[in-house]
Length: 334
Ligand SMILES: [Zn+2]
Ligand SMILES: [Zn+2]
Image (cartoon, rainbow, N blue to C red; front, side, top):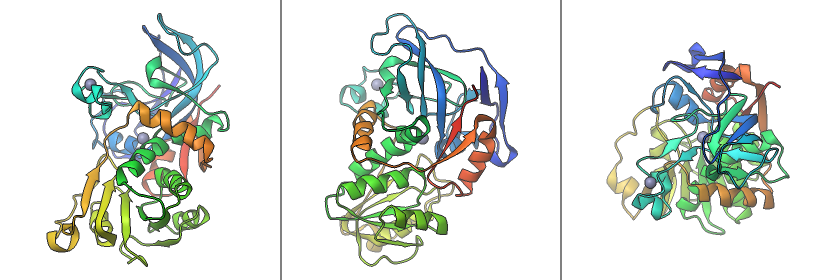
């Protein structure tokens, strides 16, 4: 099968992904083999490529996978050949530790990520335990469904953890793949949305999707935010977001890694008055299982910029430069 393979950590501008011919994965017990149709491009892949998130090497990246079941290993019961399925970031968890037992499998010490600890979807085929695959709602095309599996499902987790309520003011810092889905869910929940981004194109998309106000991260919004979500890779955003936050408000940091450190935080002006900061780690199967039907009910309208598999480096460079509108997805060769 054709796959784009990462062999060493490198700045993405050096185009480190190389097309290779790999053997088709053989599905093990309880696993399905999926013929990949489309795979989303996620910011976490930049962190893996550039060494901020530790990744097995060589590796096939990609954890927003949509395709059809080709065949199955022994003991599978849920999916059959031809079924359309999605695969997300959570590739496996132990199922036994107290985190797993309490519904926090995202924090499992043995958590494995798709396209990180196991090969992912920048390839024509991917194998996965059927317990970690999902039915994809019919109303979405294959490429439309890809960002729902990470950008959307983790965005849904971010939103829940932000504690935002109906009619409250929500600040979104950065407006990429995840935020452009989060805004649609938050509007459905009756929130007022304020979008902070430097990109003119992203502000334009935010307005189109119903933002009440848009500005730069350091601009004072017309009112204080009850909750805010920081999707940006830069440390300074934490300071800007805390400044915009109402007393008792919560800031959720939605990224796995920041590219540069968070500056010192002045306790009196930024944190006191019961302001909180919470990070988000990984994802649970329940997040994905709850979010996909909700996305169909709303319905979420994902904005997709499509690339061929062989153009993965270009898509990732554009993503790093903030030049993707909505979400990027790779189409697999036939
Ligand atoms: Zn992701
Ligand atoms: Zn566990």
